[in-house]
Length: 405
Image (tube, rainbow, N blue to C red; front, top):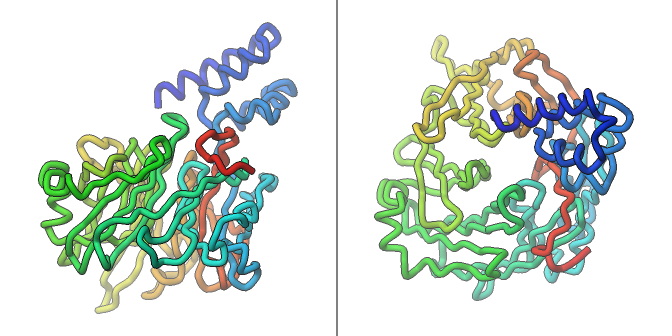
């Protein structure tokens, strides 16, 4: 946080002497400024605006949320797989992306493609049939550059697993390489196996020979032996070099499991409030956030009273801080027993105190600003929408995504 603030101050100081700085030096300064500040600096002068907008420079500059991909079964081509649509944030022009991901048409088994997840500008798809020795294959792509790479199936040993999911982990500030973390669980509360694919080695790890050791020593014991089961409905989020997932711990507790990029370490993080139902968790401004639906009991009726937003400010101690609280009465002007099901928290802005909510009755996309306490409606997503994915573009050409444009 302090490094970003220092960089912003350097950028502001440079504005007072911009005529004395060459373009390369200005871009070097701006590359170290938080993305939220980049957009403010467009107003410094025409020269700064042009530098920031230059396609040659934007590859080096931090980007922020542009809008959202989502699929629409009613309005897409089944052979395109994702059947994609894109909506831009209010006030932002539509980025030059192909929401149908038609550049993936050379993939074998494209008619069976399935969207799995996203991470820092990269998207993960599963394609081909679910049968076979290695299981389904994968594709990782960058819609900003239209580059992609095919990844073979994990071929893990559990057969047949009852719970399987594959997650994408990528941080371009740390490495150009991505990881796929494949987690399978046999039977309810049963054996867990983890395989990791590295784009650097281009192979899946063989964890079977190490399982007895990392299960006891790597923090997996509470999951494997403590009665927890993988619950992929919340997806995943990548923070502090760890992939965070939600697991269900018997008899009635949800927990966050943080898995390292080798699959050897699993840290369990307790949720902030047992009196609320987890609606969403994700990353914003470098910190893990949870959004809970507040539960109240009134005259024998369970009322979904509002939302609480928590931030894990100290990752080492696991201490959650209540960041914001808002009632459904404030949000929607009414409150009843069904409000929890009338709205869905979709995501949180990566750089601002802004959450995005779907109003289920009319499929209206809403944004709620925690600072101004204002609620705004933007787009109607349609009643067939699925696979909602925030999009922060990554314009860097990659040597890892080898199947070209």
